[in-house]
Amino acid sequence: MISNVKIKVAVSALLVLMLTGCAHPIVISPTRSIQNVDMALIKKNVAYVMTDADRNKQVETGGGGGDKVTYFPYRDLEKAIRDALRSIYADVYVIKSQNDIEDINAKDISYIFTPEISTSSSSDSLFTWPPTSFSIEMACNVLDASGNIIARLRVVSNGSANFSEFKTDFGLSGRRAADILSEKFSIEVKNNAKLR
Amino acid sequence: MSIKKLLLFLYLSLVGCASFTTAIYSPDYEAVDSLKGGKLKKISVANVQPSSPDSPVNSITLRGGSLVVKDGTFSSYIQNALISDLKEAGVFDENSAVRINLTVVKNEIDVSSMNNGSGNIEIHMNISQNNRVYFEKTYTVATTFESAYAAAVAIPRGQNEYPNLIRHLFRKIYSDPDFIKAVKK
Image (cartoon, rainbow over all chains, first blue to last red; front, side, top):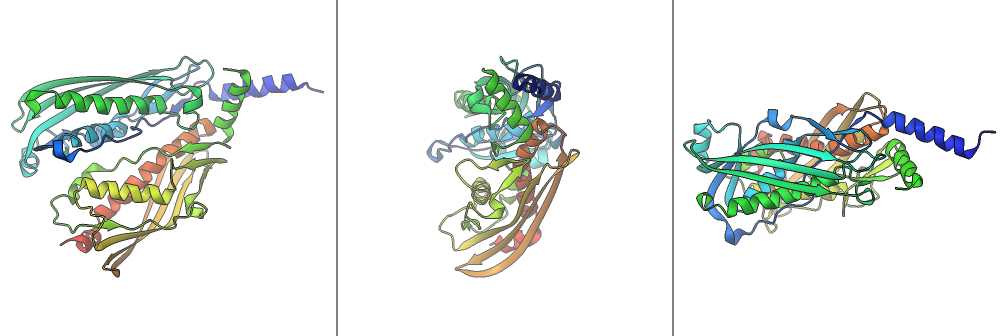
């Protein structure tokens, strides 16, 4: 008769083999929205540039146990960016290009934000694939309606999650980084006198 | 981490039996922006039906694991998504006599295939003013996505698909000329 130990070893080996080398899909959308405080809104319309090509850009970064995770940073973080701007300005639009003067004029846009996102992730676990640490860096030039750069912003955020937290939400470290990104971006914009 | 915990995690990752939280809704902002400036009426939203968590449309399983909505049901997820979009477009007013009433008829994410997964949703909408229904329409949306043999890959893909399915649903509604005509001033 095969011992229980041998069965466990065989099953675990099979499971690990089935998982090794996988690229696991996660979502890094924020866990919450920044609240919009109407009283403090700057009475200007702003836009950010994001295309479907951006939203469909899939990236792969590190997970645990030699595995990778895949996700769509622009699609997942659009809400974080939008909510941050929405907490500051009277109205926010998405536009496909900063060169679409007709659209910019039609929407009475004062400032155009052009986010560029890079991410990294890792795990200190040899056995589980969801990342325990996640980092997001966003560089964002801000243009006026004529296309002149009036500010260069850079925000870095980090999120972490442990096994007991991410077992039902595999992208939790990334989602926490997205929360922090949204908050930091909001503060960065609010504190920039050129963006009032 | 103990070996027991590792095995449990791997087992849950592969075979299900756990619950997985649906990611936050992120709208198609171009579709939401299209509602702005459209001279729309102020709109309220009724509780999306069926509200009971025991209703079949409020239950989705992914290879034995449950897909769940944090602090709610799929009906409430859809309701909150619609309210959030209407607020973003500046046309939500909870006291408005013009009210959108949604009933979920079908609500499925299927990752049983090793090749392709699918999402299907069917919503019946009516719009009333002072409780008199003046617009009725059913919206159906289907999405497909890559699935996988390993549940550790297929389940998260199904989990991630739900917000995408709802995004497609509302994009279809906001770009429907019949809907726009019904809520125009």
